[in-house]
Length: 120
Length: 108
Image (spheres, helix red, strand yellow):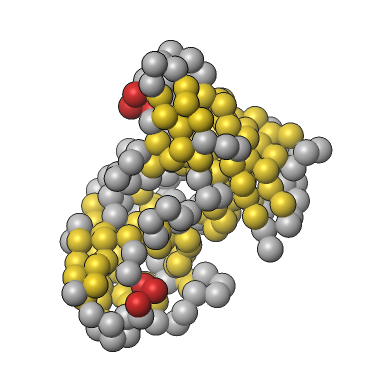
């Protein structure tokens, strides 16, 4: 059973960089049929896709956040990571990692989510 | 960006009811529409992908229809565990993928 687990919830100061890691277990991150992505959900609001990465390192980002987002992958550790720079209060959200089926673009496995609060 | 609009934003129903939610895309998305269920404090769960394909393990009381810009999720015979929030997502364009704002299904 594939499982994804984000690193722990955290508090980040404004203008700092948010960093999260997603550990994948029960399956290989090197599967050619999937990419690995991040989405977030501000409290009480809907979901926003942030970006995804393939196991070969090619990544794609939401244009609205592209200047601040970096997703990386470590296939030896079966994990991938998110960095979001210059955060503000608007970046406060639950951040989910997920597996994305590459042909039809659906998110078929999700992590539980990590709450990131931006506050001084 | 392709905007996804869900209606209604909330719905009250009883166990055993048949309910339907709609999702409308701001432009043509072919069959690339996916539905998720989310319960408070939990991760979203994929229910249906590509309009009408039931994800493995999802009960057959869930079904999806539509094409182009208008899509519907139907639950036939509501169970207590179905009370949750439902999101749609378009995967026609990955630049960017976008989600609807959700429909909250509550017990009447």
